[in-house]
Length: 132
Image 1 (tube, helix red, strand yellow):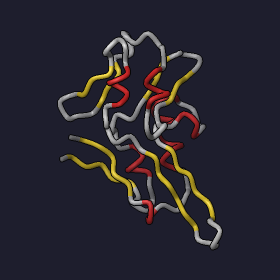
Image 2 (cartoon, rainbow, N blue to C red):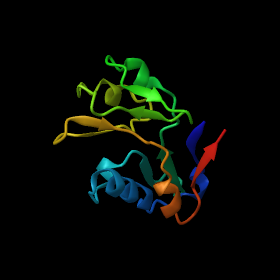
Image 3 (tube, one colour):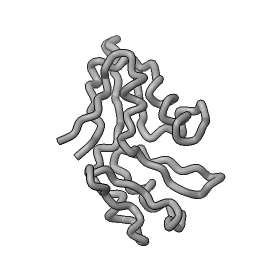
């Protein structure tokens, strides 16, 4: 199974992973279009914290897909057959990590396909691509 892993202790909150993902998927430099999400800031004690939300290929999106167009490939990565997708966006609402993206102009969902572009751009190694 191919999937992303995270090490939040290494994340510095640069958001380069989000920008690279959004640009690769939608050709937009807007982190709202990324198939991963970084929340970061200072907690009450003055300590910096980062939370990285990534697709762990759990399959919840596939379970709620009424048209069965989200299925795992040979490497265990859940892929969307976009030509067959009816655009109901149920999968977006049911993603436990809230990292599925919808583009209103296209009325279709997108999700992480474990391409690794976020891993390549991360300057600290907070993200990695693994195969089990």
